[in-house]
Image 1: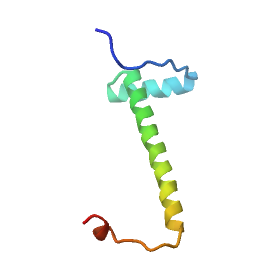
Image 2: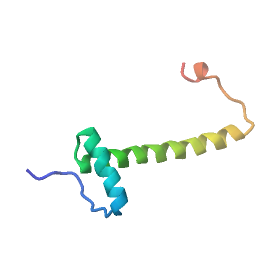
Image 3: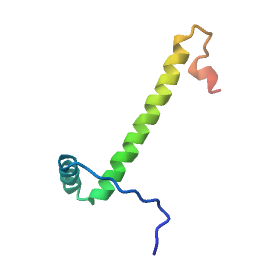
Image 4: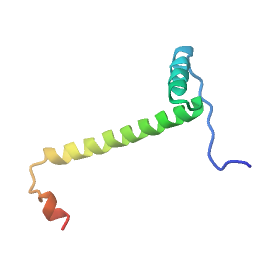
Length: 73
């Protein structure tokens, strides 16, 4: 059955591939699955960094703030 997921090809240096293969072996998972997991984790971290920069800019401004409890009532 064909998959609806998108595919990409990635070319790795031998050292990077070997490290990925060792990690996959230690987790008893396929190399592609471990690679996908690492890419998803990296994307989440990038999103966190993006929103942290926005938060830092907002906190740098001297404005009146609401307490957490007040904001979520």
